Amino acid sequence: MSLVRKHILSIAPYEGGKPIEELKRQLGLKDVIKLASNENPLGPSPLALAAIRRNLSSLNRYPDANGFYLRKKIAKACNVESSAIVLGNGSDELIDIILKTFVEDDEHILTADYTFLEYGLISKVKNRTVITVPLKYFRYDLEAIKKRIDNKTKVIFISNPNNPTGTYVTKYELEEFLKGLPDNVIVVLDEAYDNFTDVNDFPQSLDYIRKNNIIVLKTFSKSYGLAGLRVGYAVAKPELATYMNVARQPFNVNLLAQAGAVAALDDKKFLKRTRRVVLEGKDYLYDALTKMGLAYVPTVANFILIDVARDGVEVFNKMLKFGVIVRDMKQYGLKNFIRVTIGTKKENERFVRVLKKII
Image (cartoon, rainbow, N blue to C red; front, side, top):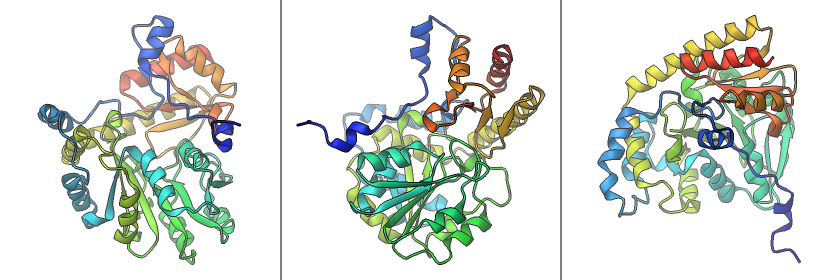
């Protein structure tokens, strides 16, 4: 008799991007750049750092279990009431909370095949059935997903912009998708990368919350540069958010994370600078990849999915020797691809130099 639940035995764990310190130890390198995990290349928000320092002496105290000031600040920014906000230890925990709150043992989850791995992984850990629908030209095929809805469907995860492809669902596509959805189906719009979009038809998801069973996920990990603090939030109609807060663990967002996130929301200057670096870097990388004859998926996020026309794991491993960490797409099933985070000008140029040497 196994000590472990049977369904856990068949699940492969999530593989994060290789840490900088690990590569330095393995290869004895001193100068390493990481373009693997879609982090902010500028570091954390300066206002957030200052707030964190001010709160260091309070680490002997538990954080506010309800995150009063952070929820209030987020609610004002989103033009909703505080009761519509659920705080999470990053978006990963919010996904876990959604499944714990709403999905019964015999109900199903719907999502795309090439999308954020945690939708499927967390669902499988909870022994829930996950149905995936193929992307169409690297984009969510909402028409095909809608056709797969049945009386067992409970939650539909849509990564918008999508990780790892960088593509997005348009306002029109989302509105058509929402028409006639069953009342017992919840749509989760994961908008971890929405602050990087540069298109006119990206949906304003918060406009749909009051009239639909929609939960919007957002994070401080990307554009605000607070990935190490693990803080995100969900926005939903209060009747949904209330039950999520019942399922949420107390003290799930730590004291420094709350203080940093409150301050980060005021750092408009940092957010503007981050967008500029990403958009300028994207143009540079597009041009360099085109000149190299490499295909890529046009992105509205802070990363680019690149077809290297050979084994992506091999390219990934060769780049490590030059101190450049990118993301291979083996776990996603995209054998000939790598994903690169858009970095600073210096980092982008180094990535291109190394990629040219390898291929």
